[in-house]
Image 1 (cartoon, rainbow, N blue to C red):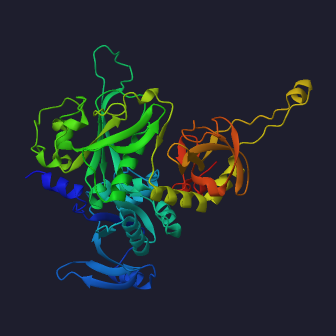
Image 2 (image 1 turned 180 degrees about the horizontal axis):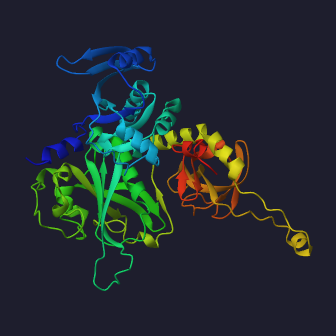
Image 3 (image 1 turned 120 degrees about the vertical axis):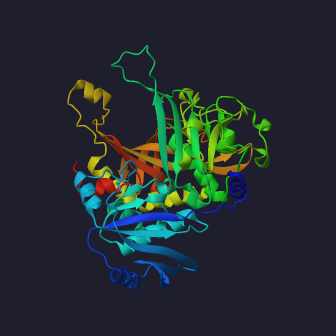
Length: 486
């Protein structure tokens, strides 16, 4: 049996959804009666009803509603498996040794499963809410559907504030596999650089989609753009409720032109890695060969040799296609020559991001007031009076705000917004001035490096950089935590 029918179903928007499975590890002992009590007392879900399984031991279904939507959760209180090892390779936060040890030794766990509805992010949020209700003293949570991604109570609680949608990449993780140059020409003590890469997701099967992957059979200068590529593809697929195969999907723009990606079933995609196939030569989905290939073939990372049983399920391989060259290319050869790439977001996603960034703006300004750039005191003397130019003190902090700037396209006669990054230079509540750090593609009235007046209403996103970390409206809680020391 091969994956053909599953791909056809996914392309038609009828992909079967795997159950989304999460595990919550409590800090204190739980009983079934306590879980029942917490479900009865909660007010987020309505019309709740518990159905115990006839032959089950501590497992039941909880049917309920959220608004007009009917929901059903499978809940099970189990004894922890002493042989199961929590792997914090994917984690929302750094896990301290003490917390890891406490969670690993916990005697109980609560399993929460559900089938996602039409809006995966909403269903994901509801599943997190159920965990918060059942296990308010959460030690650690495990998103088993996303390769066991570990999440903390602090992350969980922050995501559920105001029912704001979590970021699209909350639904999945990206697993990176790479090899290194073991050529004899390198000294034994030389740092060996990766020469090929295989990036693939875990977590999309619960959304009625296949997983996604990118194979790069050559060295690259950085990981620039890879998270954004997956983000754009996943968001496009969820917005349309299906995966579009064999056709260019618009994802962004560089100074050289428009950028697209093309999705192929991995069985077909492996044939085209490094081959520069014109997209017009691709076979229809129905005519592709889905038989397993030569298990000894290892031309690059992610070839048939690397496909163990867990990596033979439906998965789409993403290729790059440019406006000038409608042929399948691998990412990211050639991107190093680009000064910038503007990734496209759907209107719905931009609206959600903007709402979140504006509602959580006070967190940004709080950190900006305390750690933002300060004007250094001017030195007295002839030169200082002559120049009269204040300078900013160097800081290990950096604050950036993305704003949507309106423009009019005369050729096509429509109004749009270009979303660009600014570095605040002065601020006062909802008003601020920012230095543009992008090269505008459409806004002709702005120039990179100049300072412009902006308001809170312009904001669509923001980021704070501190030391080696970055903090967004989804992760700002890490800087506000009492455990942080600045």
